[in-house]
Image (tube, rainbow, N blue to C red; front, top):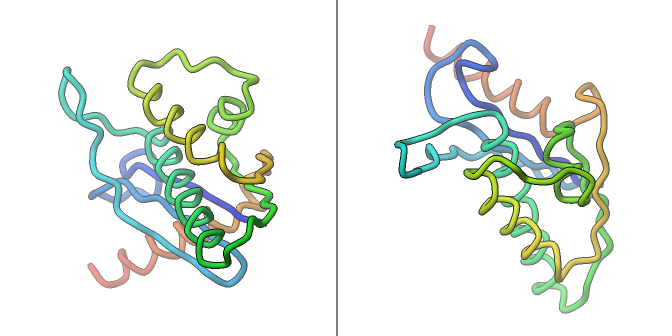
Length: 143
């Protein structure tokens, strides 16, 4: 099982700064900053953007794992974002213009993988716990 999540400060964790994306594969954990999405109307930020970036980071890592092994693994990709999971499964249309390229990239990356997407409750998303732990650690360092 693999997990992904994303967070946009101001929406979560009551902190300022860049959006964050995370993924967890077994014992491997990764948290990265996500830059604001540049659009014709100016920079945008949201939890959905951050969550898509978490999925993209995870899918890129899975592709790299398959290349390193020289064989394809089967992956169960779990996230608590109803929107993202249902969009990549084709159950929801992507109507928001700024999410269309992120969705297209997720489909492109997953097309070469043996992957199943599953929605999980927030309390079972290990990547969400990783983001919370990371935010608490940052808040402690700043105080």
